[in-house]
Image 1 (cartoon, protein in one colour):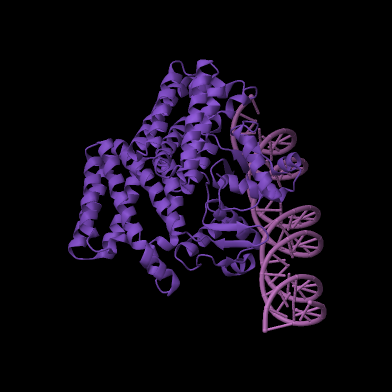
Image 2 (image 1 turned 90 degrees about the vertical axis):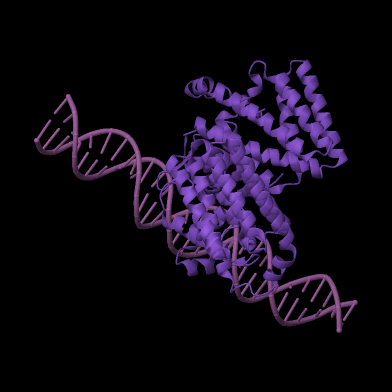
Length: 240
Length: 240
DNA sequence: GCCATCAAGATTGCGAACAATCTGGGAAGA
DNA sequence: TCTTCCCAGATTGTTCGCAATCTTGATGGC
């Protein structure tokens, strides 16, 4: 899953990862000013490595760099969030297609196991567990696709979501639908049906997009106004 | 078309753009070692700005950064080139879909004009002119899509092609087919038929992918062995 | 003659200091 | 009282230098 462009993990890379993580789980909030000296203090590294980390994050759209005015966590607007989901949709559909071609029998068995776990979690009404299974399933499909390029792009897009990283799974009536869609995807991959894998995945993610557009207007706005701190756990899960 | 993440154009950005350009047109060859001091001399900037430019280029996959061993122009393998074309295909299909929704009448008229110009160039057997028109058409569709995210990703993918930036248009028998496909795309957008726009664009780019896989084995390998310098003009054009 | 070891040169990574620029608040004037 | 101007503090951008690491070529042992 790792980028394959950059080989080992040095201290500079560690700082980059840490910053990315801090932003991703909302500890550094959107539009928050990122002062290099403060971050250097916080991560116990020099200002230079913070600086290059910020450059990297700026390059993949997680922060905004304004000359002489520093870096801010990028605020993703509602419409941008929709764009990101759309782009992810077509790319993940591509990985589903490739997975149908390249997945090993072992990988397909793994996907089926993950699916069974999701079904169980859903029966137990464990939505958080279901959400985790969902993330695992998508990750498994991406891995099975052997498509490094798509994997890299999707990872980049995921990193940009941040604020909108809520679980559409919490929307009433969505879970059973979601499970059915995931089942169809895995079945298509298992049947080596590339076209079906792609189209079922696209159908699935289009559902996510619509759910997002519907819920984002009211809910997301409310969330970003008030209590921005206590709901960090929300950001861990993956969009379903 | 510009990234919208980073606002003004400073000297540091200029260096980044210049390096990108040098790599893109093959003046810095794949696998060539990029020594910071040399580049600083060449671009007449400090080593630090070269450094951050390299970090940025590394982040978007144009160069490979190995700790303590410096940067190299990334060598795109044949299979990676196919991956890139595939990813571009689904993303450009998305832009075609969005263009069918968001394009203004003026933009659609512009696309039709570009298409007419391509037809004329083809009649005159001006393949280079046709290729330019092709690039303009795709750019126009992307612009009309109003999809910043897809535009950014596509631009990034284009930058990674470098060596494989040859014109599939030169393959015998391809041009008339290409023109027909482009016509169908523009018609679908003009008719506001999102589904048709998307599927025709995907069909078109799948054709490009197949052409690439067929020609790349022999031709590309030959090209990269010998004369790597005199064919810079080849790299200007866009994959059709 | 071939391979391991090692040293010198080259190059990158990092830290600190300095210069350039922005921000915010207060003073002067209308 | 409001507006404008300007200065001090804060923050970023850049330069410089040095330590850490890699590479290359030579030397010596087998």
